[in-house]
Amino acid sequence: MTERTLILVKPDGVARGLVGEVVSRLEAKGLRLVAAELRTLPRETAEQHYAEHAEKPFFGSLVDFITGGPLLALVAEGPRAIEAFRALAGATDPVRAAPGTIRGDFALEVQNNIVHGSDSPESAQREIGLFFPSL
Ligand code: CMP
Image (cartoon, rainbow, N blue to C red):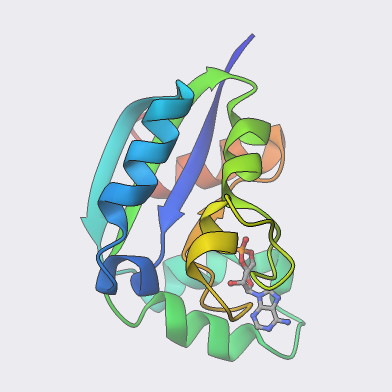
């Protein structure tokens, strides 16, 4: 069954010139892009996007980071797109992410981990609605 997922190339990934790398990996996998926009997030949108982490000690730092420069917001679709992209991204902690994954190949720090991908159909629906309300 085709599903959609929200993907972010975070400000660290954009600043390091990894947009092409991320997009080419997801396209090579067979996921299809349905929306893409480079934008700098207002704090309010960042706080909504990461609302589930509002009580975590790293929340303020995470919001500073994700609003600190332009990010690339993408919607991709395909069979089991959510799980497929999370497999490409690798574990949240890049040191634990397998080599061959985006985080495993390009990152060292848990906050600055290059990409975000929705973690469930419910999150994907909420996140796509937040970033691309017209979809
Ligand atoms: P993401 O998949 O976008 O989901 C939540 C984000 O919070 C995560 O990627 C990291 O960027 C960040 N994060 C998760 N755990 C930590 C942590 N322990 N310290 C700092 N940032 C974190």
